[in-house]
Length: 316
Image (cartoon, rainbow, N blue to C red):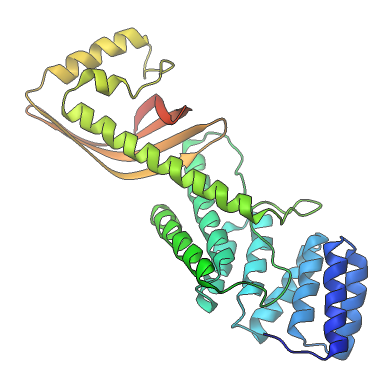
């Protein structure tokens, strides 16, 4: 908690009101006047950096937030806002590092956890899209810019939210180590949509992983009808064959061995536009006559509450 004289506190409140009403020039004028008398004041500096970020004066804002990390390394907010600015410049690695530094200062700050989870997920998706050469532009996830120091809640609800998000971070971080590009008029608002969007994506991710494992079980049990139910009617077989020919071949190949054992590992799920997703995994196949380990990629499309396979291929 920060304690100031009534006059100083009133001026800070004035600057906050000016910022909230998009009167950034007025807010800067108020803050510059305060900083003339108290050039090292953390709260005034932080608010000035936030105002500059909203004005799209990113370089000046970064200088201020970096200065604050030197003079007040125990504060998470400057690191958080540095992360937002780095992400807006497309530097997700620097954004991740700043958020990890913020997390070290306060492990119960749910905004930091949400932002870091979003960065991890986008870094994984971006790397995979590049590897597939899909040609999609990265979709920078939305991060929340903070305006004031010490304004976050630290009650039980926030601690629970932090723990939930920390689990998502660990889950995403295992697969690679969702921050919007700051627009001309920065879109730093709507943190609740960021959280709900992340939760929805994680639910879909869990659904896809469960379905891929159920697909493998059906194959292992040589249950052809169940196995084929995981494929979309729009499934495109590899090679120049029709879906009907592919189905006939799959029926024969599932029925022929005395036993089949399929194990999946290293499952990675990446979401694309238009309710589509890509799954990358390692598949271990074993039967009475053959065994093999292969890396595979699947494209899926959402079909109601389920996801259907529309293509699959082996990769090097």
